[in-house]
Length: 118
Image (cartoon, rainbow, N blue to C red; front, side, top):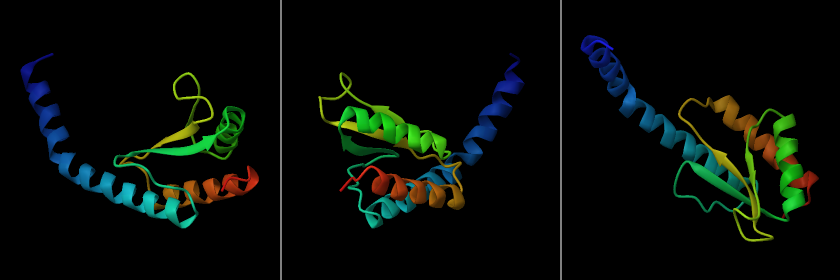
């Protein structure tokens, strides 16, 4: 690849880096605050949120429910985590809109009720 194209791409990437970083952390805070409000423990210090489910089968069903409702969130279960410590892993990005975060929280709140999680 010609050097000029690499330099141009690098400049465009770096020009948005700070803006995207700030947007990411605004989204993380908004999602974190929403999780707390609907009663999920927020044990994250990053843009990756583990939603502890416990039971592996319920975690898989929870993940399917989220997917059917427009949210891609990975169920994590044994052997990746200890037995009965299954979780849903949600990653927040700078590209998410306020509406997408609000919808995600709405679906998570409904899933929490549907699967009788405390």
